[in-house]
Length: 247
Image (cartoon, rainbow, N blue to C red; front, side, top):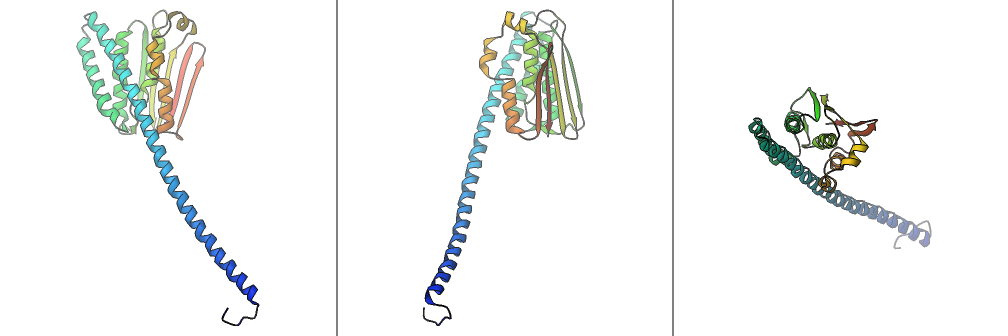
């Protein structure tokens, strides 16, 4: 306004106004991006807290169910005055220790998880000695590889649960665990019959507890959202679970 310009005052005014508006838009954009970033970080933190709370709740559901199941096994053997009862009590003690201690960790060594599975299978074999034939194998290339605790036991519990209601004896349950180059491969196969399920029915506590297969699937989605593949299928009279996890 106080200096001579070749162009007219209006042109000079509009040019400066456009410059200031441009700077204003840039600064506002930076402010908006910064504000949105803070909101996104807060949202992600809330989401993580929600997932952790849900995960803790799911783990709490799994633990009591497993313990009640093993206690029933010990009780049945004690009634029969089975000579293996002391050994089963030791297995139960190890299971308590694992559930109360290791399950509080986010991750455990896979060798500990497999030992826990072995103890559970041993207890179930004692309880269902005439009903089931269990084939369990494990091939681990790195015993210290870490995995979320109590992640596979739900599938194994399910296999024993449905096999235990079948008529007859000598039903085969096949469980295989492999770890190769940080890739975990889990297979569980058990016989299945809709007719026996309908006739004998299932314990209502199993239906209402919400543990087992569904809880394990939810935990997999929370813990390994993009690095696992789960296939659950029924082929004829066989129920099959195939799981792969990139640890």
